[in-house]
Each structure stands twice: as structure tokens, then as C-alpha cells.
Length: 178
Image (cartoon, rainbow, N blue to C red):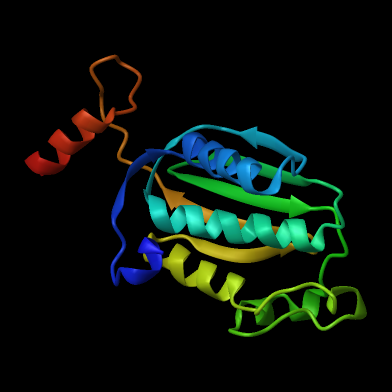
């Protein structure tokens, strides 16, 4: 995958909501209806789009594998100058004392309920590495949720339309003039 092959992130402004919806549309073609509930505040974010897609795919794969088919909640929200994403399933969860270890390579939750679930134990490890490339953190937020954030947002400058949000052309011009 492109995001894994590059040594450095290719960070650029993008619509967070569009990126999430794009990943979900792609997954519908591969996995059918996954029963995903969306609650997304849109924001322009500064991310490596390929890396963001891989991270979200991994989080959604984990939610699908360990969620017992009960559906997944995806929530995106703004907090000051950043945007946060939470992916929560309604499955068996994980033990709080093992939460941080799940990010180690080749580590999986060691429980009878997860023994039949396919996986290498690399998804969360790779996701954390990729998220760090564009300045975000990924962590186990609760027993059934993974959180990604904070993801930086472009500077809030005055735009032509007065919204304060720069379109791609305005942002590129701003970057060149810095």
C-alpha cells in the first residue's frame, strides 16, 4: 500500500467526512452492509489521506471481527483546532489491562472468544505507526472503542466566501506565500 511504502507522510488538507464516507463506500462493495452508524462533524483536516484510509480500514476491520455482528458506531467530532474519530463496536470488548499491549506487533487479545478470529496482530500496530506520521494518536479509548486524534486542521484564515474555511486552491496559495 502506498501509505506503508512511503517513509514520510504526504500531509494535505482534506474533508474528514468525505474520507470516512469514501472508506465506508469502498467497504460496502467488499463486505456488504456492515450496519455502521455515522455521526460525523465535517472539518478540513491535515492528513496523509492514504494513511488515514488504512487506519480507518484497520479500525473497522477490528470492529467487524470482534463486534459479534452487532454494528459499529463511527463518530467524528471537532475539538478546538483538531478533529477526533472514534470507532466503537458492541462486541466482546477487551480487557482494560491489555489495552496498550494490543498495539504491540503480533499481539492479539488472548481469550477463548477471539481464538477463532483470523488476524496477525499487526493491524493496530501498523495503524498507530501510520497515525503518528500525520501527527495523530490512536488508542484504545474504552473497552469497545478505538479513538484516533487529534488530527490537525488547517489554519483558520479568512476565505473568499467568508466561512473561514479555505478551499484547496486558497490553502495552496497560503502555503506558497508563507
